[in-house]
Length: 119
Image (cartoon, rainbow, N blue to C red; front, side):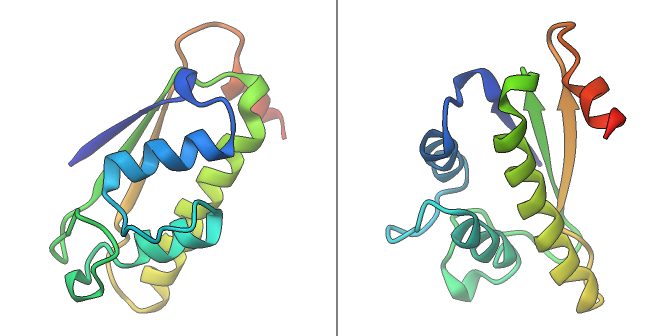
């Protein structure tokens, strides 16, 4: 399954969490913060938790296709990637297949990817 996140629409953390909520269908009490995101994504293979409308089988994965990235949104992208890393680490520590992959698509040549690689 592929879920596209257009970073040109993301102006701040609140908007990012609103978009993620729309894409994943988090619970009504979703906290709109990085910890709530990690907890929700950690339940992708646990439908009994009811944390997200998307449910994965044990071998399924979600590819997050992140488009229109640019250097002025580095902090937002970093927090999103931190959440992916934290969730995948939880799954790996329990000997389960990681649920999230990330593809970064740069639309322009202001080279966010060059910035990330230079770090």
